[in-house]
Length: 362
Image 1 (cartoon, rainbow, N blue to C red):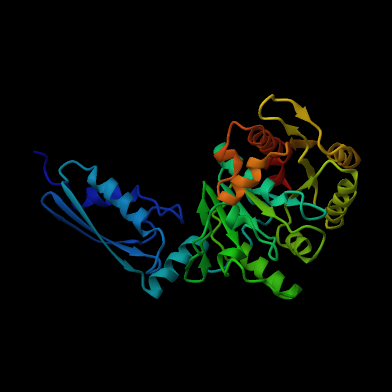
Image 2 (cartoon, rainbow, N blue to C red):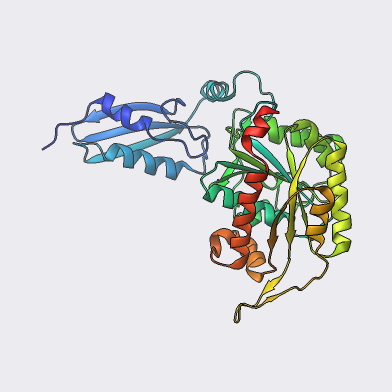
């Protein structure tokens, strides 16, 4: 029979347990309270950041798994209570320091990519969600900011229904499918309209950037609203290292409208990394034959005009829309489909077109 573990051994095991939102050891975060060892039974007290923490079951599972794996442990009891205001404040300051400038300023390790379009209806948000998921599946840490405040759709596309929570006054991004997200949709009722003037919009976007624990991801993708309004101008000042990816469809009329988004990027001195053409063609599921549903070649024409690469041509596929409605983007729900493969190739092309080292040097 194995000897009972020491308290030090239990704490060492708990050090390997990370909070699922903060991605830090629960010991280092001050979330571990009492630790009692009574023979082969261990009792651990956990301080949750908030009383109604939506991930407390996952934290409990990780604690039980880590401590239960120690030699000599037969049972693990986990008790949970909430941190005091002082403990939450100490945790927040330990993460960000007393001041909170934009984490994506010059010298940031994060590659910021704004996904823009000249008009709605071209599948920009779907492209953004799938690019984020594809980059995460390739091993990158990815943040996704839904800056389309009036027409937010990222929560539904990523299958998230729970609200965002805060530690002290620091918001936690909601994580799903390996992507960390923030959207006004996490802070309001799904069918509630957002009726804000420009200054309130700028303040909200500033909060989403400076008051969210993004934790220096490899990539931050920003789903911009269509057109060239206040949001794009605000993000240009808040995210000065951004590059833009322009989404269009094959029709030349759409290409001409998308050109305005590229002109807006040029006006605020942000580079365009490339163009993605959505709904480029249709692949018949029974024969594999490829049909050009919309003629025009708008994506290639826009890329040539701007002197940037055409990063991808995404086929028109019903599974893309249905997967988004179901809350699991097509690169995860139908990874072998033509659209999923095209989106994965586009994500790798985006990563190559906006090298992280180049941005860090700017």
